[in-house]
Length: 181
Image (cartoon, rainbow, N blue to C red):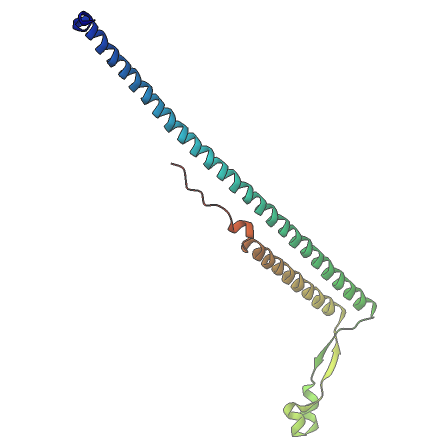
């Protein structure tokens, strides 16, 4: 056994074996640390993808809710427009048939001056009413119809803006995702 320990070839083999095993261990350790780093990166990417997917689904839910809100506003707007048109069409028909007469308050300037009464001349005379002609009544009804339509449209725009602007409860819970590098 002593001769074996003094043999330089045994010592050389032992040193080569230790060096070989340490170099193989170092290479394997390096590969293992690289694989662990890659695994951590893949895990982080998968986690970020899950967060992004969850956030996108919440955004889609909010978008669907907003879309249905806007659809309800559009239906309400159409109903209001139809009601206003029906009302104005009925008024036009009543004016044409004579069931409704449109008139305007007037004052006669000649009556005040001719009476010689200072109170009447100062504007204390009674108001009189004058009936509008057919074309004048049609013009005023058309003007009122356009004004109603514009007011209804503006109210629909205001309602749509308010519906889009208000934050929904699910919108406040959206996670903040850091940008990937």
